[in-house]
Structure formats: C-alpha cells, structure tokens
Image 1 (tube, helix red, strand yellow):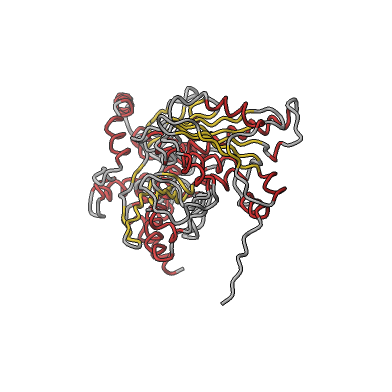
Image 2 (image 1 turned 120 degrees about the vertical axis):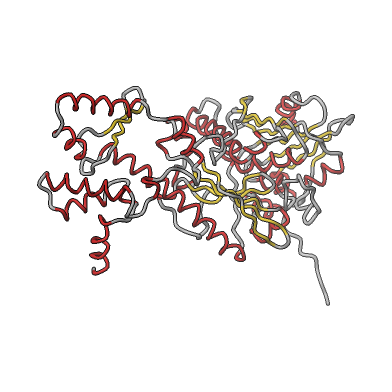
Length: 498
C-alpha cells in the first residue's frame, strides 16, 4: 500500500480553528479553565483599550509550566487523548490555541514554575501565513514586550500569562474612536457576567478561586437561588451511564412576587426567565450549558421557575457530545426517558407555584370571586392581609345582628387579622412540608366543610341568587375549588355529558 503524507496547510488550519464560533467570553472562559486546572487561586483578566493596539490578557498564579510543557501547550492538539487528572477542565488539548486564534493574530504565552525563569513562546499568525509553516517563536516579539511586562508584574512566584494582540475586530480603530471603544468595554461586561455564571461553584466553593476582570472581583451568579428561603430543592436522582453516575437535582425557584426587584432581575439576567428555564449541565463543577430543554419539552411561561442541575462525569464526554468550546452538550439517548420523567416532575412543581401566584393575584384583583381574605400592597411595599368584609357570609351575619353584636363581630374580625401567625405560616410555606395544614383537614363531604357550604348556599339564595348559581359560585371559591362535595357534583355530571 502506497501512502503519502498530506499535512494540513498551516494558514488554512489556523483559519479553521479561528472559525469555531468562539465569543470573547467563551474564549476567556477556556483560558480560565487552564488556570483552574493549574490550581490557581487568583486569576486576572484584563481588557486594555488602546485602539488598534488594544490587548487582552489572562494571568494566574497556578503551578506554571516548564519549557517543554509550554511548547507542548502551544502545539495544536498535542494532548489529544492524554489522560487527565480529576481536576483538569480540559478535553481536546486545543482550548488555548483555538480560543486565542479566534480573537488574536499574535498570541504570547509566558509561564514559569517555582525557582525557574520565565519561559516565553509566541504564535504570530501573520508569520505562519507568510511562511506556510508552524514557526513557533522563542521569546516575545517587540510588539508584545510592553503589555507582557505589565501583566507579568502582577505575578509574584509561579504562574502563567496568556496575551492576545492584533485583535482583528479592532484593527484600524483609533484610540479616540468612542463608538468602537464602547463596544470594547461592553466585552468586559460580557466577560464578567459569563465568568460569574460559568465558574460560580469555584468562586463560592472550597477551592476558593479569586477571579477579577480589570481589577474588579467577579461575583458568582447561582442560577438556582439556593440561598433564598423560598427556593425548593427537589431530591437528587442518579442515573447510570457507561459505568458512571449522572446526578440530577431539580430546583423550583421562588415565584417572582417573592423576590425583590433586584433579585428578580438577577434571576433572569439579560436573557429573561423563559430562556433560562431548563437544564444546567456541569462538568467537574464547570457550567457547560445554561438553560433549554433539549427537546424534552417546550419552553412555556408556566415552567419559568424550573431549573435542573446535571452533573456530567468527564469520562462520559463522548456520550454528551461536549464540544471543543465546552459551551454545548446534548443528553444521550439512553438517558432521555428518565430525564423526561424528572423534568416532568420539576415542571409540575413549577406550574403549581405559578398557579398559586395567580391565585394570590386574583385575591387582590378579581371582584367576581368572593375570597375570605383580601391581600393589598401598600405604597411602602408592605402587604396587608384583611378579612373580606363584603363576603356574603359576613354581610349576612352583620345584617341580622344587633348594634352591640356588630361591634363585637367587627372587633373579633380585627383581632383575627392582627393576630395572624405569620412566623408559623412562613415556616410551613418555605419548607413546603407534607404536613402543611389543609382546608377542613382535607375533609370529606360529611365533614364540617359541607355544613359551611350549605350555610353559604342559604345565604346566596336569601340574596336572590338561584341555588344552581350559588353552587357554581362556591365551586369556584377557595378552598372549595380544590375540594370535592355536593357543590361540584352536578357540574362534574354536566361535564361528563358534554
């Protein structure tokens, strides 16, 4: 068999790597992966505006690399298939190069281990295109020395600096161009937000990574609002995949009315709640994908509070189709049925929470229904909970009472309003306990609730309402709308005949 080596043309391969579709924030996150894998405790990202000479750097205080390790790291796919440690966030051995080539024509990397000098290597993509060869430059170019020295000054000890220059998106721009400068500064905000989400477990977790963008600390963004008392964390389930366990933990976020304006905006970020519902896929605590149902179901407003964390073992990457950018993944076919069952349960809980919110709104705004209680929000933001004095039962009681009795009844109603056991109710609500009290003890038609319902029918009939209409009104009134009794039996028959 005759063979002949057909090596890829360097300039064409560089162009292909640069066309992977990296955003700036995704590329920076790929470099931060390397810093965390090197056990860095401090990572600095700097975006420096200087017009066409603008540059971006990522510096860390990790273990650093020897000279041979640096050359290997600069070689495309040199670590393809290499066995990785349990804390290594890499996969293909291409992240440094593909992430950098997407945004820079000049890539300089400096690294050192303890008690070593700095080792520096440079890829000049214009030189590669000109010579048609992979010519790795030893040391830094004159163009890179100023920014590189500025970045190296931030590291006292071992560490690594990755420097991007000749950013194609800003070639030809002047330092005074305010419009282009504004776009460059927007990238800084995008990077900050993306890193806060992607690495939120590292920023809050035991590994305690300090991450800064232009000297400002990156704040972690927990998509599940786990510190909020009203967040419901459902039981974690485990699914077996190729000998490894995939852990799934559903969360139901608090209804928006239970959040402050700031919390509500933070929970939706720029994308909004609808887009952020769904699966959050993690690989070694690093977020790969945020939101979306992956064809398990459609996005619907009633599921806005459902967010589900999936822990994907790195050993199962191939099953999840994790891409080079580590920004997308796809649930394997073998897990889709149990995943659909888990998502169904989470979405049901979210829908129940949404209905409860709607009921609260109706209690405040719907004049067609007779609620026993009225909720109102004052101008200072506080909420009042008052017994509905216009309820038919109360009106009937007051209209047949003497003056002294009316005074006593009103006093009793006011006492009940002011003596609400708010702390106890809050505990019961926030924990969503199985032993929460139910109206009439979840009674049957022969309990006290039937007598209360019959008294209400008598009151409505006395007011000139037909018995059938009275039953219909009661069947739509909390708590009877969730209970079975004589008030809804006729309606059930009608629906059956229909």
